[in-house]
Image 1 (cartoon, rainbow, N blue to C red):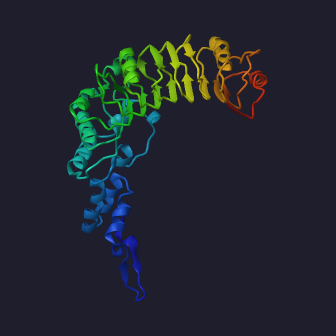
Image 2: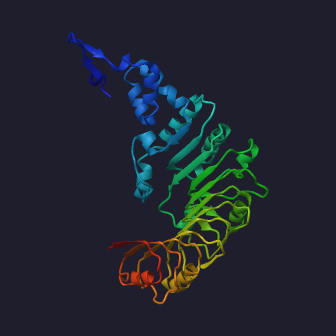
Length: 373
């Protein structure tokens, strides 16, 4: 920032720095809206600004350490396809910035804590300390979005390098305040009798490794869980979700190639998203049934059986489907409660197929069809 740009001319024709005339409380409020990188650049303008600019950072309750805040670069996860991107950003610089902020942070509480960078098991000590800081400060939201450091490795070998989330660390601290946990490219395996996720309401796992035992343990212990997303996860073959005490009402299972069986018996699940990660998936949903379903089948040989099952669901009001190839079967059962149908058709899908669903939905009120190449 060029300080000359904020100089104005008063009535006598003399330059005056109107920004510095603002009360400190307003300047602090402005600085609190900036990214970490922008604050640092801004505080280089003047010494008083350096003091005021660092104050909101060192008491900030929502801490986000990612490429945007550290390097001033906004990127998406799918932009990273090889190791060259990881090499473009210095891990030492990133770690130094985070450590400096945490060292100087003197706020009594942290509400949310996010780390988004290229880390794996090699950085276990660093990540463990950061998580310890967040939990000790009472963070209710924890987000570890770890980018791949080893794109040259096969998937199986890369998963062996994933960071192992430190459940043991949470056991050493006071009862965990965590309500929302998001992990990407991590290994999650809570030990027996682990109860520090008992306040979780949201669990999001992306390309994480979680086995059958760990998944069953999470579902049995997280009685307050309302939203569960498994996106591209591996390890577990069975997803059995049920029980009268579970509050889960939002379940998303997306591209989990190891899952062979999904059994759902929940008292109030409202939304189910199922993107098949493997053919011949066994799906069983007991009443009460979801009111909204999004379905993206991998094996269209199973489409008839799945739609027949959905057609028997009482209270199913919204159905979304992605149809890439093949046909939507004829002579479908009646979807008597269906009010909205959202179809995404592409890659040679039969355009006449939606008529089969229309004929099977006598109470349909809204139809959305998207056609893509």
